[in-house]
Image (cartoon, rainbow, N blue to C red; front, side, top):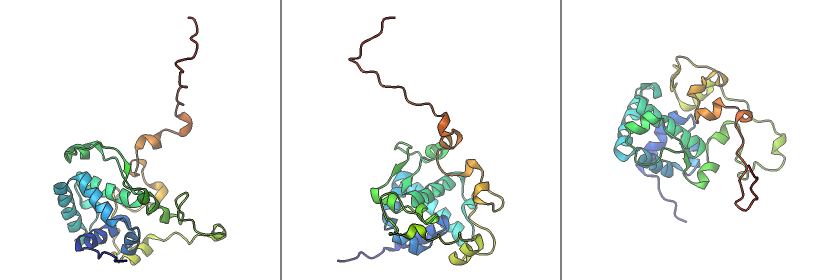
Length: 214
């Protein structure tokens, strides 16, 4: 079997996505989705707009900066790209960014491919696996997961400076459970409404059912 060589474009894409996702290049290549994700992002944002975003993001990375150095529209594209790597789905963009990019497609979240869901990096953040795929093996449930890496350890693994970087919307580092709700990914309504408060759907009315007299 002939294995296609990684193009310079894909190599650059993966390298620049390392600080965006917090995962190593090895982890990103291991998903097998790099080319698909690049094509998806370029299609969803538009070739010209994506090239402008990529230039801005590359400049920020080269200057040891992060998403905080991007414009609001480019920041939204960066969020979408990170979301894509983590979940295998392209998210719904903020309405302002969707309008600014003059996107012609529907602004809806979608999974780019069945294998993208399985290869989502989010499963690795808690040493889990997607339901029905990539089972860890018999008896591994009894083995405690490794400890959560520290921010300092992640910086050393990624070769980052001591200065905290790659923050989005925060002035200093905080614990995950202290991140403001409006900075978390996903549709806000799904986080603001508890499941118990969501009304159930009305029962379907059969056309052949007898009608009650008023």
